[in-house]
Length: 390
Image (cartoon, rainbow, N blue to C red; front, top):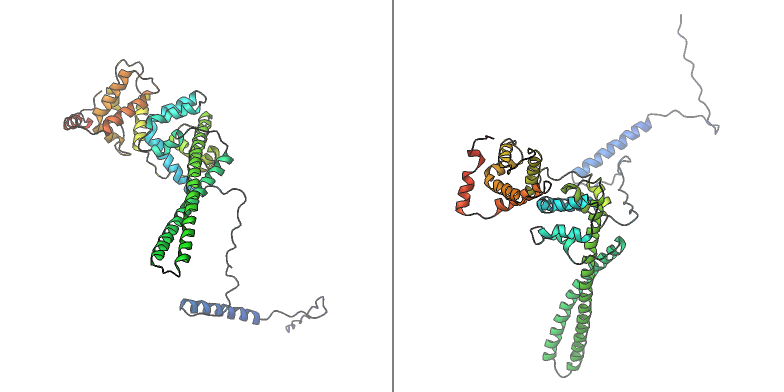
C-alpha cells in the first residue's frame, strides 16, 4: 500500500491578521555567538587586556545600598560579646568573695543600693577594680535611661571639643612666638603692622584659654554626674535582675545581664547574650576551685563533729585525673586546703557560706608567697605521696 503524504499544515494567523512564523535556529546560533563573545571577553580580562564587550545579562549588578534602620542604633554583637567576656572573667575571679552576698539579696527578695555596694566592697582595689568601680564609684544619682544616654553623649562630644581646643592652642602659641620673633627683626616701616598682629594673636590666645578653662570645668562636672548616674543605673539594673526568681545567680547569667549596660537594660542584654556561645569552655581558676569545693561540701556526711578533712582528702583522690587540672592543684596544695577547712570549721561559718569561706581561705593560702620551710611542708603533705585511705 503506498504511503500517504503528510499534509502540510497551514500557518495560523495571529490577531493582527498576519501568519505566525516558526522560530528559526538563527536565534539560537546568535545566543551561542553571544556566549562565545562573552567567553572571549572573560579570557581577555584574565589575560590583562581590556574588552569593550558588554557583560552577560545573567551577571548580578552592583549591590544595592543598605537602607538605614529605623530607631536608635544599638550595640553591635561583637562589642556585646567582648563586654560579656569581661564581665564573665570578673565574676568567675571574684565569685568566692561576692557570690554569697548576691545570693543573699536574692533570698531576701531584693535589697537597696547600699546593700549591693557592700557586696562589692571586699574586692575594691583588687585586680578587677575597673569593673567593680561601676557599682562603687561616686554617689548613685537617680536617672532614667534617656537622660543618662543624653549626658553620656554630651560628655563624649565635650571631650572631643576640648581635644580640638588643645590642638588649636598649640597653633596659636606657635603663631604668637612667631610674631614676637618677627617683631624683633622688623624695621621701622613694618613694626606697627607686626605689633598690631602680635597683639591680636595674643588676644585670641587669651580668649581660647578662657573658653578652654570653662569647657574643662564643665567636662569635669558632667563626668562626675555621669559617674553618679551610671552607678545608679548599674546598681538598679542588677537589683532588678536579682529580684527575679527565674534568673539563676551564676557568673555566666550575670555577665549576660550586665554586658550591654548602660546602653540597654539587663533584659535586652540577657536576651541577646544568651544566644551567643561561650568563648572558652574553661572557667577561671577561682570559680573552678569553688565549684569542686561546693560539690564536695554538699556530699559530706551529715552530723559531723570534727572538720571533714579526711572526707575531702578521700574525695579529692577520686576526682578524674583528666580535665581542668583542679585535682592536681588540690593534691599538690593539700596542706593549704586542710588548713583552710580547719580554719573555717573553727570559725563556725554557716553551712551555705562554708564553701565560699573555704575557697577564699584556700586561695589565700595557695597563692601567697611562701618561705622555704612552708614549701617543704607542702611537699611533705602532697596527696600523691600518701595512701588513699579513709
